[in-house]
Length: 595
Image (cartoon, rainbow, N blue to C red):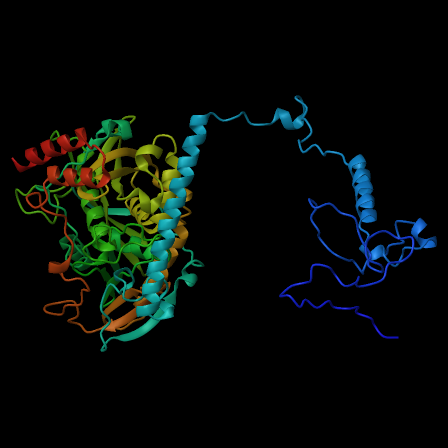
C-alpha cells in the first residue's frame, strides 16, 4: 500500500496557488467536522503560546483512566488539555499542604544560667574603639609580615640557608671580631651544656678595696609618670670610664700582691654568666700569665654597648645609617643609660667617699658618680677570683646606708614592640616589663647579675622614651621603678648557682691552657662559644680587627648639627601631630645647654 500525497494544483496564470483549489489533500470522513481527515487537531486560541506540537514520551493513559478503555489513544500525544488539568490539580494539592516556616530563634528566658552570665551590651563608642583597635592590629600584623617577607627574600637571594632569616651578611649576625686564618680553634662549647652547670660560692664575698665617690639618689624620680615626665638631661662634662681588667691599676696592684689567681670586671663576668641568653656576637680576651688568668675586653668591644631588642622576634633594619639599626640603637641606649644614671642623683655636693678616689680620673677632673668595689670569691682551695664591681648611687633607708645601681630601658618606636609606654606604663606596668623581658632578656639579666656581684641593695630601672620616634637625640623619662636584685633575679628565672657554674667551667678550662693569649667568641649564628689561640700581639698596635671602624660608627648627632627645635619640627611633619609644648621645652633645654 503506497502513501497518497494527493494532487498538487497547477497555476497556469502565475506564481502561487490558484484561486480555487482543485481538491482537498485528503478525503473527509463521514460524520466528522470540517477539518481535514486523518489530521489530529488540538483546539487553541490565537493568544496562547504553543510550547510543543507533540509529546511522544508521555503516557496518555496514566492520569486518565477513561482513555484506557475508550479510543482516542492515537491522538492523545497531541492533546495537552489533560496535562494542564492534572498539573493544576497537583499544584492545588501542593498549595493545600504548604506551610510557612518561622526562621526566628526561640525566645530565651529572661532569668536563667545563660542570661545570668550574659555580658552587658557594649556602648557604641566602646565598640567603635575596639573596631579601630582591631584595624590597627591588623595593619601592624600586615606590616610585620611584609618586613619578614622582604627580609627572607633578601636572605635567600644573598645568604646560605643555614644563616636563617637575616642572612650572614646582616650586621647583627656578623662576628664581633674578625677570625684570622692564623688563629687556632681549641674548643667550642654549646650553650646547652651551660644550662646543666651549677656551683655555689661563699656569700657574701670579701671586699678588698672600695674606690670612688657616690652621690645620693633623688627620691622625687619615684613619682615620675607619663603624665609628669621629665626631660633627659645631657652630662657632657662628666667622664665615664670603661677600663678593661689589665689596664686597671688597682687590679695590677692586687695581682702583684698575689691576692687572687683570676681577675675580671663585672661587665665581663655578667657576659659569661648570661651567655645562654645572648644572640649577638661578643668576644672576651683571655690572657694566661704564669698561674694567673686575666679576662679582658678589646677597645671598642661590643661589651661597652648596650644591645636593644636583642632577643626580639622583630628584625631591626640592617642599614648602618638607619637610626633604628642594631648598632645605632646600641649607641643611643648607652648614651641614655649614662645620662640617666647621673640625672636621678641629688647634685648638691653631698657625696659618700671611700678608701681611695676614682683610680681612672685625673686630678681636678669631673667624673660620674660611681664606686668600684674590688671583691674576692673563692672558687676552690687554689683558685680565687677578684672582680671590679660598680654601684651608681647611695641612699638612706630607715637610717641605714644602702647602695644601688641605675639603668635605663629605652623605647625607640612602639611599632616594633606593639606596646606604647605612654599609654601602658600607668595601667599595665607588668605588661610593659614582660615585653622588655622578652625583647631584652640578655640585657636585663646582665644588669641583674652586675647588681648581684656588687651586692647592691636596690636596682633602679628607668623607662626612657624618645620625644618623637624619629628623634633619636631628645628623650624623656617616663617612669623609675626599683627592685631588689635577688627578687628580680627570681622573677626573670636567673639562677645564681648556674651563673657561677658557667664561670667556674670557663675558668677550669682556661687554667689547663698554656701561657699565652686566647679569645672567647660567641658564634654569631649558632648558640655556642669558641676558644681561639691568638698571637701575643693580637689586638695591639696596628692589629685592627674591629668590624666597625671608629670613623664609620654611628654616633649621636651633635647639637649644632641637629638642634632640638629642628628635630621636633621634623617629628611634627612626619607624624602630622602637634608636639607643641614638648618642642618648646626641647628648644629651651638645647639653648641652655649651648649657653
